[in-house]
Image (cartoon, rainbow, N blue to C red; front, top):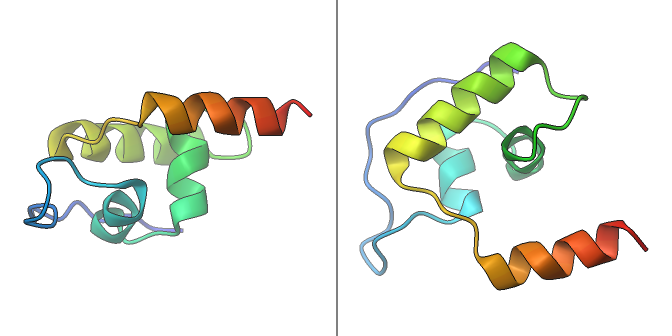
Length: 76
């Protein structure tokens, strides 16, 4: 999957982009972005670095409550 850096602002209704908006900016799937942001080994280092840099530039920050819930769901 190829990612392109796009200089577009997140939705005007909030100051920080969502995971879905970050994926749209990256030109990839939200699942790929999620895995890249969590340093999942299934995503190449090059892609992880690009996604993480784009997310940082866009101001993406995970919701701590959602991150905690998803972490619990992933571990069973």
